[in-house]
Amino acid sequence: MTLPLPSPPPGWTSWEQAMRLALEQAERAGRHDDVPVGAVIIGAGGELLAEAGNETIRRNDPTAHAEIVALRRAATALSNYRLTDTVMCVTLEPCLMCVGALVHARVKTLIYGATDPKTGAARSKLDGFDLPFLNHRVEVIPGLLEEECSQLIKDFFRQRRAKKNA
Image 1 (tube, rainbow, N blue to C red):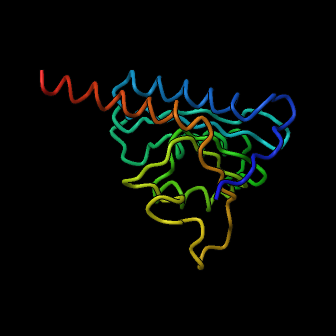
Image 2: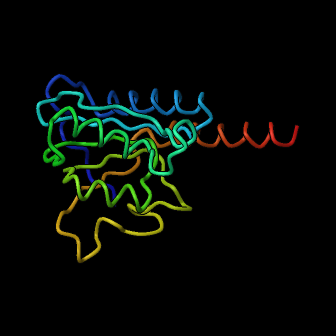
């Protein structure tokens, strides 16, 4: 079930505007040969707290997913590891590691673009946010600019396969 989008925060015309920033970060990550995933975090007052793309290849860091990098930057911006009343927009459904990080950070809402049928832990393979032992619930809204987000990933892997086979 897809929940309706909440009203955009002050200073934003729509959530699509935030997702387009995430798409820009994803494209930047792809240019660095990282899987093109991008994330932005918006504060309750509409402030852009963080934006990031995947940096796993660039940093040689398996935890440098766009979501984790954005959470680190937002926590630094707020001088607080608790990111209550924030919204993360990310181009791809988070994995289990990122779901855990979003819960620990106390993010209020997650809006994502493309589903990840292989490792998606927000809805596709696991309802990670609904695990009964978790002490925080994140509101999840899937499918924002889904086609654009999905196409970016598909194009990246198509190009990667073509290079490998050339």
